[in-house]
Figure 1 (tube, rainbow, N blue to C red):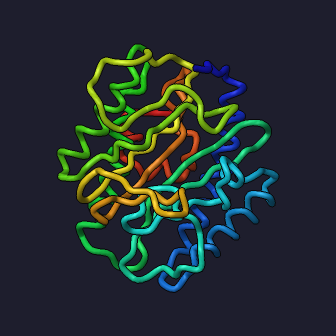
Figure 2: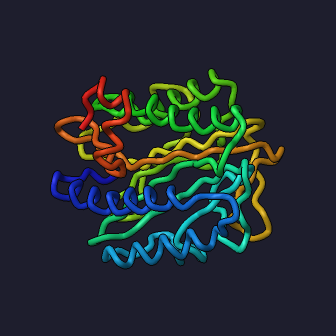
Length: 263
């Protein structure tokens, strides 16, 4: 595991702010009738305009800059000519490389009007992230994050996907430690100042079992129930926890951050 200094964390934040800005722009474009490949084209264009490189394109053979996962698709959905429909939900997972450091974030968005249950699923995925970050402090252990996510998600009547994990990030897109979204507390390495993690709850309305489609990338729920994904890159600093992939204006809208005075 890499311990990053303040200057390095600042560099990782610059990369993540590009991710945050582009995701915010993509959110405004989501509507019925839009093809997912149009989102991918826009994300790559904006990335290069900002002087960065798409982190996912070519990574282990992945063909696109953006992951677009619709409805029962959990993660790694490949952009295509498929059009979004009213009532869909879509997860956008996006990363960039900028000045030698990686940024990574994801969120799930409604397409037009969605059902109350789908809306709750999206909110619980986001809520699981914010429940987990209370565990990201000096002296806690990695599995305390995992336990917090699982406990909250299951208390809300949903399932945690167990086939994919959060991870360290910085000089590489995926670094140690792996951070599952489930597990018992008090296990794994101790959390220390200077660590940088990508925390990403992935949850399902039904069962947690996963199937990968013939494209060898798109992971879906085996029972075809809806799935939601929420991810931010976070750093443990001397001043506290900093959510590197959250725009400052977004922080002002989150009561949890106001109450706990995170960076």
